[in-house]
Length: 274
Image (cartoon, rainbow, N blue to C red):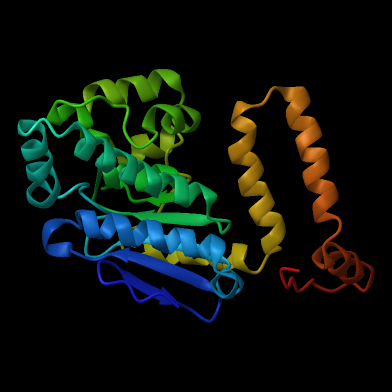
């Protein structure tokens, strides 16, 4: 199992793992170390057979009353400015590639990821939410892609590719050009949040959905996530062919046969992920 030092990890009996960004006194900012550990966690959820079998769904949330304020100003932004002053282009590129790797590993992670968002969700924190498969938020939460506020482009961690697919090109353009905060009700209205919950319920509601997904056919869920990702770059004919192959592969699983037998016997199927 995982034993991270820079975020909290828990695994419940319902096979839902919870990743909690855990620096509430500073609104759960990210550091070089937390980026690396998060990448490692999502990579292992894909590559470690024992962990993959133990975890069927993931919840990502923040400790206290905030999700994440993004990169730590003192521990990340300051060192990056010093790299700039030293003309260390290679160091800056290594950093931007590392942050992008977190989004890559989240999208490649076969388990569905549900984000539970309260309070501030900004910068890289907003990108962790964006890279999740489903997002639950609160009315009081505030989401912002703040990169422009520090003199950078909105093109960070895949934002220009991912955000338009969630909220649309025009809305994504506004958020990335202005760096303004989007309130919780607006985020739900624009489709960034799947639903709103009360602050004292958002984590529990996210966990409930994750538990429901964990009871489902995990291989089929992994295929759905993979195809949602891969079909972004396909035309409709290629997508139909890709889905034909994907579904035929799912039809070779025991879970498919289990579902049929359960239906004929008038009972609820128990999916085992095989």
